[in-house]
Length: 170
Image 1 (cartoon, rainbow, N blue to C red):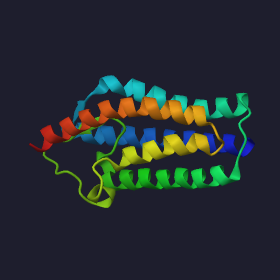
Image 2: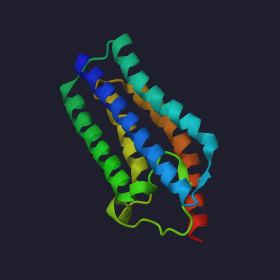
Image 3: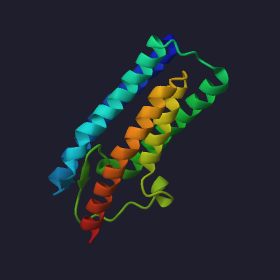
Image 4: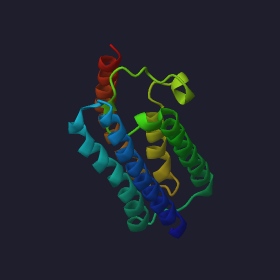
């Protein structure tokens, strides 16, 4: 269980790095006339993602979930792939990426990197990670609960983001 705990701590550390990058990018966008949209859902999103990490640890430690190599190793590969996709999104969007919905009016939509094929590739990474990270150590309850709640949050988030982008490029 210690290696899994270290994995969760590493993901938590990565999230902190994301927040630092996000704050810097938000300042950049706001300094260029960026407008924030849909702040109301953001605390729920933060709470859900924090609960994912806590749930992974709590379920594994409290319910003594085993590591099953036939499940754990493929799930770890999906976690790593989701991290790669997430950072591909971050680097493709550059200073336009942040964890809030801030759009700088007049900038064209990004149509390179993973955005060539997907409208919201970062959310694909979130969905995959939300299923795979708990299942690395068979925390299936956490995977199920996070996934159901995440679909509700993403339904709101994607509507907000699509509306903001449409308004900004109109």
